Length: 300
Image (cartoon, rainbow, N blue to C red; front, side):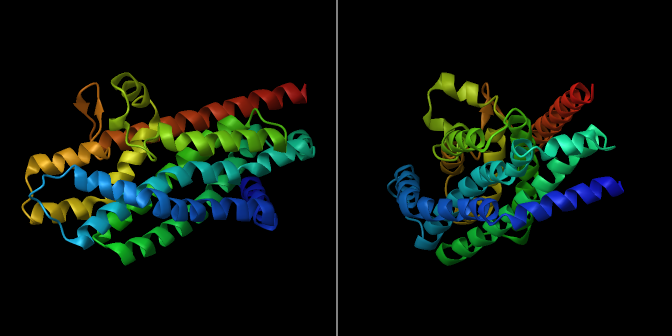
């Protein structure tokens, strides 16, 4: 346990010491917030209003709360994964400069070494994503705050869970990388593609039926839906308080993936948590197994 804590401390210190890695990871959610608010805010607003019956007029604050909730849920869903890839640069650096060979020939078990990378990456990812969540809360506070204390806590829980998933995903992928060039290429691909396949940039309800079914097998979809439900829970409650028709509210939930369906069967929030947790544990197990196998080959 002492060895594990020492390695975690070493990895975390090296990450924050490298200003390039730190600011790259930190600036990602900030850029997303600015880009989303600038370019997607009006798109989300128009899509929301166009989906309502013509005789329904909502308060401007409620419309702002809806747009803000959709924006921050998209940002946090993407950031928890993309930031994890930035935070995981240290693993690739240790391979590139040969440090990993010194660590693997030392009397440190491969499981301990693998866990030290995972935990330190998770810690840095979580800190940055919590800072991003704070910025998101400030943004929503300006345009329309409908979040309850429970909503805020559940959103923070989602950040923790999705940071665990993002770290596990990036660890399993980065295991096969050995240079900064490869890491940059993979990071660019993930940053550009993940938001689409998890439904953050465009709701999966707008995709073709066949593509929707494929996307429903991807765990990121369920993470985005969790963020949607908790970021917009207060907005939906306010819509109910204004006596909007239930079918209208249900239609809005479906259109933004707050309600998602797996082969015509609605997926509950509990099932979403189970899917994300199960996939995260599976990815951690795969990562540790790969690391252990390579360590044994190296020691021979």
